Image: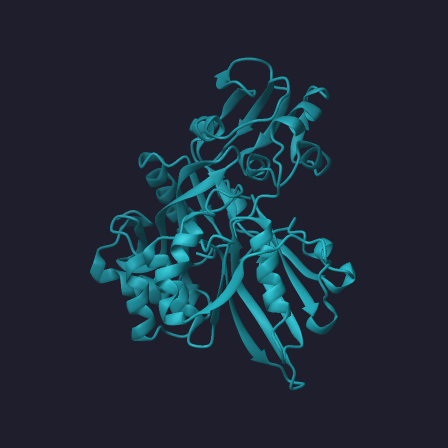
Length: 398
């Protein structure tokens, strides 16, 4: 037996892997009802286990998904989740073995991208993942947050019974999937698990436009605080257009007996403060990484996204974990192809992630030391090539 035997788990081993994952996160064992809600997310062949001396030492799984990339295409992606290593087996190469096997599997499935949401920020760059989207947490004092009269609106907001949420919300979300880079798919198994995680206290507001077509929703829950005030926590809000988003915010900020409204994760460029008569009432309490992305097939991923108008740039990519991606690529608005030209810019594949979805500019990454410059003229050209009209945002936990 090799030091780390990594193989796909069979269905009878899924529960053991889930319990190992929970222990790795210092969480208590799962309840049967929670496990029953989780089983639909486990795809045969995509749940990996690492064994040491015949015992399960670590696990990682992925679900089949898509992610919106600049230009509006949905690109196949492996959504990596439930990664954990037993406490007595950490720092022995177990995680590396799991990540290597998983990325090879993603490659063979023809998925150009892998993605995850990291519990710790220092783990995944060595496997080629980089922060591709960020999100903010906003807090407002309800009584002092007043909307400007010129903010777009219209339509109607209604409450929907939580028992009917699974029949209403997925259709709305599907119309929002391509609304900005970084949005990912939500299948039936995801909805079942998410609504179960929220429990019994959440409420559902749905916005319909002037023609009665549902185009946005918010999931929220009132919570009593220690000072006997009430905080409205917004867990999930999405809409197909800014007017619907604004109307949902108007509704939430108009609920009586609420002292504060706290919402996360929200897009960095959501114009909430611009909608208010006093913009200081929108307090940003946190900006955090959201979606981590890994370009598994660099040329395929680059070809799938749209680029801005600029002269082509020759980019050299270093990928120690998947050496097949090593090399130079000529990137332009009309074509992307491997080439043997001298590189103008060089970067690690992990630094390509924030550039790929448009979260960071090439100039910013140069200033951070993440891009080496061989031709200074290539920097502003890369800024224009990789620019996006809005901030990328995922907003979906998995």
